[in-house]
Length: 399
Image (cartoon, rainbow, N blue to C red; front, side, top):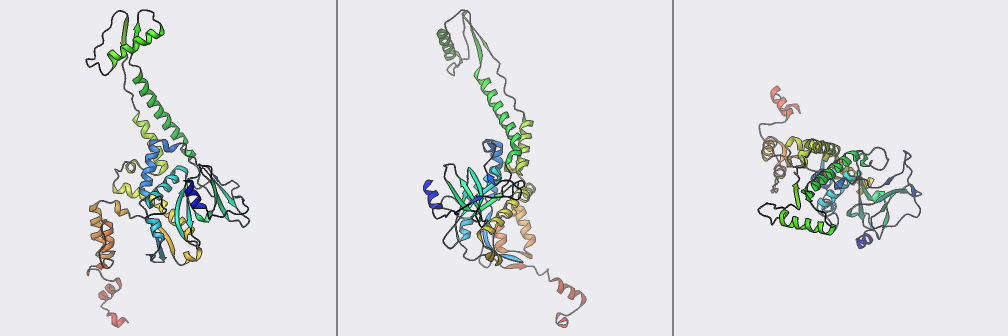
């Protein structure tokens, strides 16, 4: 990866003189990833994975925004970066998955916008740094100093960094760390360790072998090994133990480890609530109402934040004034049942609210030629014409 680092940042000119950024709150803007070892917890990892997998389905697009509509930007090279391959090492799905995972693990996610000599974005690279320091130069331009795990560092303009923040409260530039979840993670870790130790203990000691005569330690160990091999191994198909007067074997009753389901569920609920996801979403057993709630409360805010951040970092003010916008979206209907989709299409098409191709897209089917036309039943007329008809007014007379 050293070669990648050099190729990616070789043209990057560092500012001549920078100093640590001074924030309005008086605090310092220094990012150090804190996850409380959350990702090693199976409950937390499963929850973050469920959110990231679904967020990675969001489709990024370059559109031209008008007051009444959005139109796709013609021949935009950005769409390939956003929808197919943001860089040579990952797909668009992988990029979004990684960024959303960082977003929920560290409440901050960073990505570098690689630009060519004309200032056009030619690559998007998610960054996982061990340390990020925010700096300013003499003109008050903001920079990020990234320190990576291989001890290499680079200073990049904040204007070239996609920065997503969660729990954005205490710091002026960074999302707050997940320390609030520390007690729940510690409890989950303690519980898992308790179960592991209990299972190991119950499996290790199966009985007590007592000898009626004194033996040297070496002889005692030898007799124990012989007894285990003869009677406690899998080869002892009969399951019968034969002893003489020189030894006694007392088996220990092995009680199964009882798992407290209520305690596990309480920990799950606490972690899921903190992340904004339900158990049904994590287990992919959700119904349409549960999915709609998850989309509106968790996925949609991420989509809005990414849309605004990508737009303001990719386009300058003049380009934005002409309507250039990046949007991330995913139709909620894509996750509805086929019956719901068909019923909705049947209700909307007669009113001209959907085109044929829009209906086909909802059903995950390819579009057809001339499918962008809107159809409308003759039973529906313009409201003004309906009033004229009821009043007996001729449209030509009114003119």
